[in-house]
Image (cartoon, rainbow, N blue to C red; front, side, top):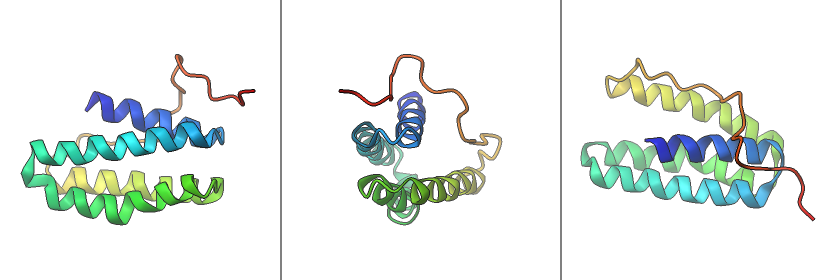
Length: 112
């Protein structure tokens, strides 16, 4: 879970800064970790496939397209859907929200 949370936060702030290469990296590695989590917990496999296909795909597309408006719209939907799945799987006490503090160890400012 820690790797998922760290990648999600880094992806959010990279995309918000329009550091698209970094956002792409974090979104790809996040998807990989999410797929791996479904392997280790097979009871979540179908829900994870649905989440990745329906809820995560628009976020990935926005990043690939470098579309900041679409990213934020997809992000808001993603947050809602994460919390929906938490309720569905009886962990509704885990309420995900948009992070407010960027990772202190990463710099998403334009690089030369």
